[in-house]
Each structure stands twice: as structure tokens, then as C-alpha cells.
Length: 200
Length: 200
DNA sequence: AAATGCATGTAACGCGTTACATGATTTT
DNA sequence: AAAATCATGTAACGCGTTACATGCATTT
Image (cartoon, each protein chain N blue to C red):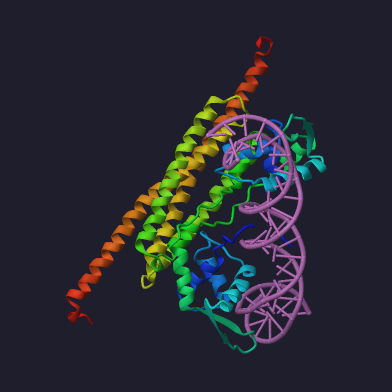
């Protein structure tokens, strides 16, 4: 019966080791830091925080604001740190791969040649943009060496840079192969026409 | 309210363009072909096939077997091919990234140094093994050039090879960085001890 | 005698996104 | 006047895995 496998509570615990924050802050921080590695929506964040606080992994202080609703500021407890440590001691499990681009390419002969080329070109656009964003993050990390996790953040960042560059290499190779494939087909077709009387 | 985004029906339609098959066959085929790109469990496959057949995207023939239960052989219909083509004409959407290894590394300072090294070493073991499996698949594709999708299968395969090699490069770099980080810490700690009287 | 494989399927459950609700403040 | 931002939260729904059920045949 589908035992729990989600890391959502641990992400929140981990980010709250940086400093106490509200659910809204956590959502913002996820967007600006680990967005390329992990994602959480508010629909997950708020209920998770409540459960974690109820179980004693987090403490919650209400911060009153004029006009705006109260901010619920959560901070990690000793119990929460223990849970985070237990989770970090377990080897990370590989994700189930789900790559829609590759899936569609796998059925390439059923798609149009321009459509497939566009799959790859769009991917190049997307990932080139991400690479540029990683450069910005790189400078942010370099500017904040006071955080004890900074060297690890750098390693995570390097993963993204190396992987995305590899993807771009693949894209170049693939666009060339697609080109060859379509010209090859055209030539074979016109060749068949020209000497169709000689076939078989 | 969470409109449908799953590609499960289309995977099944796509694989059934190769040849008519049963749900069990499809499960086996997924394991042996696109397992590194996409995954489906029987709990998804069987109900999906039923729905697709009920909607006219697939036809179903019962094949009686002695002893064993009947095999339900599904084949794609013209309507099914249209649906597949419509799906292939839409640009693939990038997946939401969820990489537990990188997530745990992000919180590296809260984990033990040996644990983190092990994250990376285990990944190297896993992905090295996958690279070898891809080599086997490579030879299988080369031995079966009669399938019209074979050139595309090769491109998908190349993606895996290039990406995994990039991961292994990152792993080398990261293991070296982790080494430096821990020796640096040890030196700083022993340095502090030796001239603690001089500190601050 | 017990375990594994073939082959089909259903039920339960956890996960995660999206949509919606609220309400004040600030910006356009 | 309308839209966006801050800030919190809930409800509905689809997705996907796991566990279970069945039953015969073959293997250990």
C-alpha cells in the first residue's frame, strides 16, 4: 500500500536550518535556489509545515502584521535536526526516469521531421537559458561564502552545468543526424523514382 | 483541477505501432527498451488498455491458451494512430526536476563526510552499470535495422550515453572536491588546536 | 511440497498540482 | 478601477505504485 517515499518534509527541515522562515518564504526560496533540483508547491508546503509542527519537528511563532495576515514563522527543533540527519544518512534513491522528449523521439518515425527538429531546438533554447541562470546563481554563491553549505551548493551547481552542456552536445549531434536522415530519405526516394524499372 | 498531463496512453499506442501485443508483453517491452527513458507499471497499463479499447483507439482480440488465462492482444486502430500523431505534433514538456542525490548534497554540511562520499560512489556504480546495459541495447539496435524507428532509438540511446558520461565526469570532480574539503577542515581544526592561545 | 513464472486485473493509498477562497495593500 | 502582491490555507482531482487476488503450469 504505497508506503511513504516523499522527501517533502525533509526539504522543509533542511531549508529551515538556514534560518527560520514562513511557508511563503520557503516557497520563494525553493524557486530561487533548488528549483532546478527539486520543487514543492504551496499545496504541499503549508500542510506539511502544519504536520511537522504538530509532531514537534518544527516550532511556530506568529508574527503579527498590520493589514496583512499573520506570518507563521517556523524554526527547526532539535527533534527536527535529528530527523534531517537520519534522512541524510540514507543513500539517495535514484528517480524513476521520465523524459518526454526522449519518449517522443523514440517514436520518431511516426512524427514529422520538422516537429522532431523543433523538439531539439526548443530544448536547446530552454537549457541555454537555464545555463545562464546557473551563472547568476554561481556568482550569488561566490558572494556568500559564510554559509556552511556553500561548497556543497557549488557542487550541485556544477552538476547542472556539466549535465546541461552534455545535453547541448547531444543536441548538436542529433540535429546533424536528423539532417542526414532526411536528406538520405529524399535521395533514396528520388533514386527509386529514377531507376524504378530496375528495382527487384 | 489538475487537467490530465500523463502520457501513459500514448506510450502504449506508440509501442503498439511496432506490433500487436498483450498488456503483459507491453510491460516486458517497456522494461527492456525504454526503461531508462520512461516507466509504466501494470497497475497503469491494464486499466489504460481497457479505456483505450473502449474509446476505439485500440482493438482487442482474445487469444485462448490451454491452462493459462486468455491473452488479450491489443492492436492500434486508425483512430489510435491519429491520436498518437496529434500527441507527437505537440512539443514535449520539460519534466519537473527531482533529484534526491543533489537535494541531499545541497544540505551537505548537515551530513557526515563519508555519507556524502558514498552518495557519489553509489551513483558511479549505478550509472556505470547502466552504461554497460546501454552498450547491449546499442548492439541490439544495430542488429535490427529493419525497424523504421531504429535511427531514432539510436539518438535516444546516445542521449543516455552522453548524459551518463557527463555524470561520471562530475562524480570525479566532486570526489576530488570533497577530499579537499575534508582535508582542509582537518588542517583548520588542528591548526586551531596548535595555536589556540593565539586565536582572536 | 514449495516456489517461480505466466497473465490478468482491482483496490487502496500516498503524492502533487491546480484551482479556489480570503482580504488587505500597493501599483498601474 | 483593475490588477498584482503578500500570505495563508483547503478541496478536488489525476497520477502512479504497491499490494493483493486468482489460478494453472513448470521448476526446484
